[in-house]
Length: 164
Image 1 (cartoon, rainbow, N blue to C red):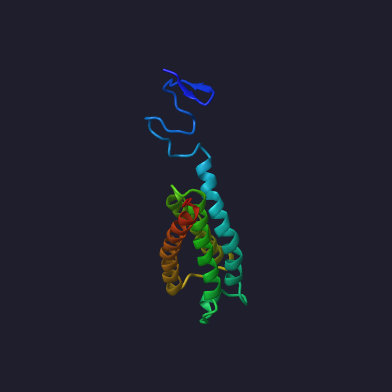
Image 2 (cartoon, helix red, strand yellow):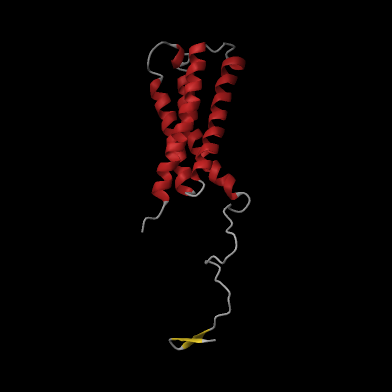
């Protein structure tokens, strides 16, 4: 039965506009390829900040800073940790509904690239081993980067959600 709205007639035909949900299930995943972009951008942010910091750390006066006994290695480690926090925040901001999963995936991929680069450099480029203390710090770094990515995603998610 038609209703009068102003001077126009609106009919109730049971159809719903494209921007409204009907009774069906909602598609929660973006189209193919979009999820990879949501993971690739935070990964690139982490790697763009981390790789130069790690290059300086690994080649400080011909040896890695972490092997020299000083605490100067904390500065590049702080830069790398900040990169993982910002990468997680970017993932959470860009896609609040799946920001946590995207941040963890981006953080893990960036961490794998950094660790593989460090191992490759030590074993095949300079032909030296890895001290046990450094392996322990790498393990601590794995846990720390996971936590920083998660915290960053929650922070970015909070920034990305419209509160109005």
